[in-house]
View: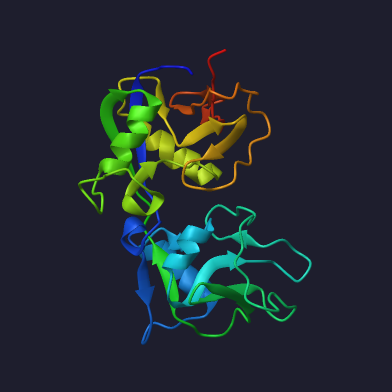
Length: 245
């Protein structure tokens, strides 16, 4: 396994309700999907995005989430960055052909007419740069010990921490990550990308969508984001992963 000291990039991760500053708007704020999206983008980050089953179980609300499609033949994607949805939590007999926007009802999803008025969920995404040099394993432990629910056992389980190493899925995620990383004294920052048993994954549970990551030995895992990679004056949205052979 590669041992490398770099600055640490954290994300306030939406595992429990308070982890990503989710705000629920009900009466008198009920809106159609497009109006709810505009409201969330003006006052928060966006309509909430749910990337795995653990996150879905947290949202015991009924209201719009950020999932939508252009029409009945289009893929489902998230409002934040247009990311194609991989994880879904459809209710029985859902989705059907009658709606292009998604409403959650106590963790189960259904597609509705986008012009209907519903309550909605906004979220505020936060990245925190920790200016301490750590190995990846120490960085992960440090993240999960911050604001732990059980201070006697700060890193015991997925449900026992408020912070995690960052998962960078969309171009917007990369842009926000590099912006936060600019104050690091190193050229790279740790992310939540890791290689376990020869497979790349995000520690937060999201599916890895990159196709050009190197093959790594069973005991090698690490994931860094280069903060100053430019091409024609623009950041290159590439996650750099490396392993010790």
